[in-house]
Image 1: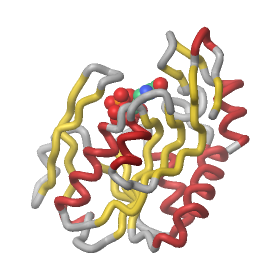
Image 2: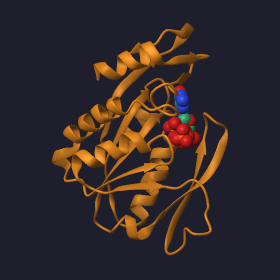
Image 3: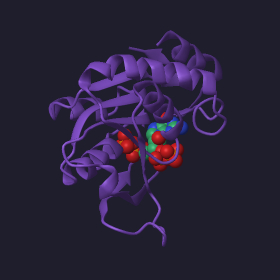
Image 4: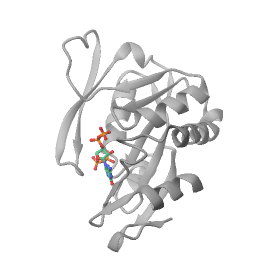
Length: 189
Ligand code: G4P
């Protein structure tokens, strides 16, 4: 997606050789018109897949996922990272490790919001080693729903996530694919 590659090049900032800061338009300040275009692209790619609902993980996946759900005219389910006293009922849970941040969290969602048999499109901001996507897959499948596809705003193709998803046969569609970020220079695939 040219518009996104342009935003990454002009408004992104490379930290070291593997972290891209995009807080100017994606995960702190949000460029909502860019998010709307992103939503349209994901919807176009996955419209034929008969998606029943879009899912994401709080917080940075919410903006692109919301516009995708709007375009597909389906509900958006936000999987939670934080335990809450008011999040009760039949909860699905799994642990997700973040290699980038060196943390881990319990990913949870209400079973009612992932009905058995539903076809779910998972949308996220970054794909690095794929842990978030596999955590989401686990929750979706434990509810008897189907992971119909994964839509990623920025794929770091030099990390293991894309290959891991491909090996599992999970349809992956990334709008920007970064081959390398050596010496602060972003090279797209
Ligand atoms: P993985 O899910 O693909 O395995 O990724 P990993 O665990 O390595 O990274 C998890 C967190 O780090 C995610 O944020 C992800 O968006 C973020 N992340 C990964 N690579 C980059 C990067 O190059 N730049 C930025 N800005 N973030 C990156 P999170 O913990 O879920 O936080 P949130 O922002 O969604 O709240």
